[in-house]
Amino acid sequence: KIKKISSESDIEVSKLTSALEEMNVVSKKNIAARETHLFSIVSLISNLCCQKHQLDKKNIEISGLFEINKTIISTMDLRKVLMSIVKAAASTMGVKKCSIRLLDEKGKTLIMTTSIGLSKEYLKKTEIRVGKSIVGKVVKQKKTMFVSNIDEDNQLEDAVRARKENIASLLSVPLIFQNRVLGAITIYSTKPHKYSQDEIALLCNLADQATIAIENIRLFVLKREGIISITQSLAETIE
Figure 1: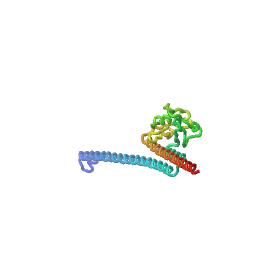
Figure 2: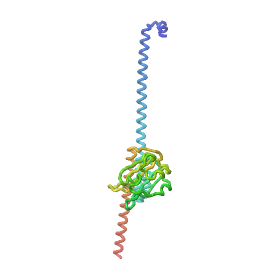
Figure 3: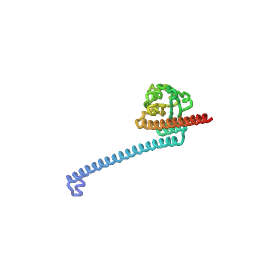
């Protein structure tokens, strides 16, 4: 073909060959440049999607904390406040099951105080001894613990009951106020899941909100009872 073009155009074969080689080099360079540009665009889109995902998670977290604070401000009803916290925790953490257990007066047993997404059958066993099962150990050791897969972990005291409840993994955080443990907040997932540091930090933030609310309400009740007691004493004195 080159010879035919050469004869028809009266251009030397060597010059045509050289020109074609240069064109091939330019073409390859263009393709490489376009590929590099395309990879840059894909990387940029990926980064933007990642940033959007992080912003969405942060917005959900802020929304959850806002709802908790709004409830704390509007009522001194502990059950309402705790229910607001478990709902916010479940929504924020992307799960359907969450519970808060508080220590009894003796500090030896954890009582199921508030929950969402757990069946009546599962809630029949409302008490957990401190130091037993995951939640009990969380309270005793005052540290966060999780189980990524209950089928591969023997720390859960009643794994059979958990499986019936369709619980595959859980994350539990102690409720601590001024080094005094009050109980624990726990989220449950229906699938095996290894909890990230961000997820643990988020539930810890919610736990902090819960402890502040519990302590504020406790102080409010003590103050109210104290005022009532003083009023009664004054009334008795006057009589």
